[in-house]
Image (cartoon, rainbow, N blue to C red; front, side, top):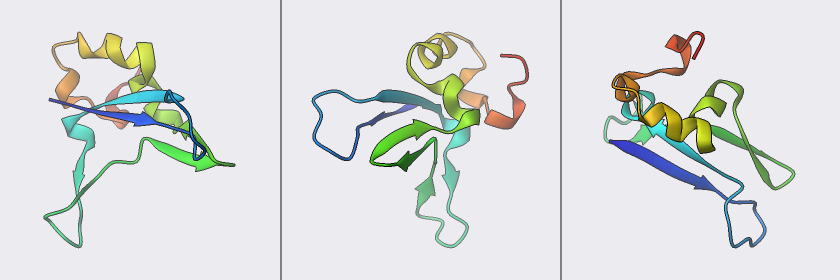
Length: 83
């Protein structure tokens, strides 16, 4: 399963700035409310989205390439090492 998140600028734009392809292992249950889940692959600065450093490998063409790996669904940002 993949969580694909398109990130658009805060102003109207017909296309996303980038798309994050997040493995299920990166989607975490909320500690305060177990019915909620969270994932934070990007931040906004000046109205523009930016991929967080450790999540860049899950974005755009690099993220699609990772989808091909058999271990992709279990990948975590802290375990990717040299990938």
